[in-house]
Image (cartoon, rainbow, N blue to C red):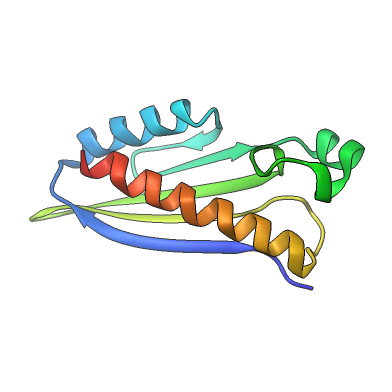
Length: 119
């Protein structure tokens, strides 16, 4: 048993303030709740431990599984470096099938996030 997580980083050509606004828009679009934010990072959560416990991890859609993301921004001369980490926030070790469910969701989420920032 292990914890599911996925990370990625890339550089975009936008200024830090523009990238920050795009990140906030993406988080809102994905219906995530911002837990903490400052000029260099944003932490957000999504999912419901209650629904997950009531339905069980097998029946719970991936969107409702508890997860947490930390997005860090660093201004560079030629743009902004974005580092995104997303991980399960269920509070337990996850089995292989649940890890697969999380990682599929995380992979799609990170692709959507990167595409949103590149627009």
